[in-house]
Length: 115
Length: 109
Image 1 (cartoon, rainbow over the protein chains, first blue to last red):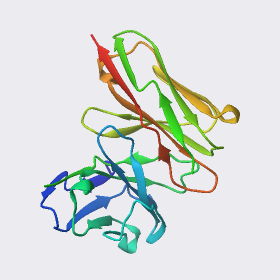
Image 2: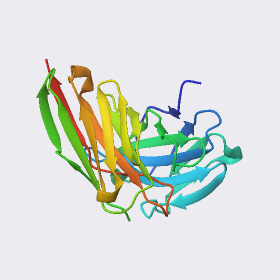
Image 3: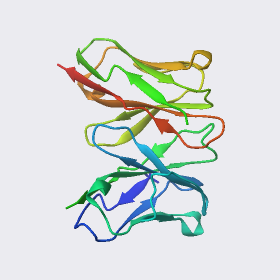
Image 4: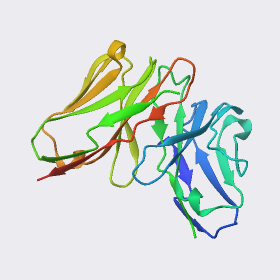
């Protein structure tokens, strides 16, 4: 296994359209995180899963955002009715066990541009 | 929630120079990690270091949890060290990491 995989690498969409991103974590990593990063800023936490259970969601995650992790494997992040302010890099990360004593490994991200 | 601040925001070095990056956090932490984001945007985990000192080649990190700061040392810098360095901290009541705004490092030959 070569690491956390994210698809697509880039996504350009028009305002109002729906988009979906996919994240495949490292095998056997049971925790999966979504972060969002805008230019010049550090990654901001969005949500995380322990296996298939979504354990925490940030207040940044509006009703237009939904994340799933069916069967505790890959995860999807959907944004409905996209807005220009949604333009950002969406990062996925995974970890084995808990975040308390393990390193977090990131994918290459999906760069979203909303026109 | 926990606040994470990094300094300096920007650092320009000539190849071969040493540098120290600082990370301050506002609350007790049980998780502190350092990352390097390369010019292509990939975040690479450098250290998991909630306390104590670790070394990995030319990089080393020290966290003094009681004084709420961590330092990342880069010795004999190389052009490939360029990029943005982030620290991220997690407190006892959460399993998420909060990132600082980063230190942008540029190393020139």
